[in-house]
Length: 231
Image (tube, rainbow, N blue to C red):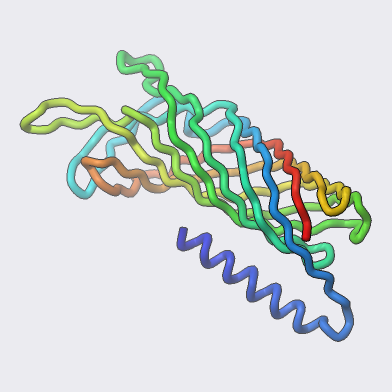
């Protein structure tokens, strides 16, 4: 979350400096928008394959955490942003409960659901502004958390073996191709994204927070459709 705050501040600083430098040469048209949409996330490979496990040395206890498999799942999203001519800066949030599994090829194989949420910021540049139909590239950053029920195994000296949720904290970057069509004051955004994701830490209720001995990488492809209101 600190990284997200730093990126937001950097974008605001760069934007303000750029606009100040060109305010005598360019007329800046500013507008705001809010949108509702649906992202469909496709797993295209990486470490989140449902095989293997990690030995997590937590603050309060050591546990064995099984790596989950995540496949394709939808992610309802809400977004708010600002447009400056052909430039767009947006903040978005999405939440869902995807189906996952872990412990493949072992006696602990389990299919379960998980809690997933993601908050991010994205910059987009649109060609053909100010036409109603525009296309352009985008670059984004997001922080997400995936809580997998029962994926952490531990031993308590009083109660014996237990299972609890493992929460994976992830950072990701997104490279996107975007299309926007306006039917003022409404419009439709369509995006295709590639999102490399890396996980460096996890936490459990009993073991607490722990850094991973190696970074887990996973790759997602996304198709995103949103309707927005511009004002």
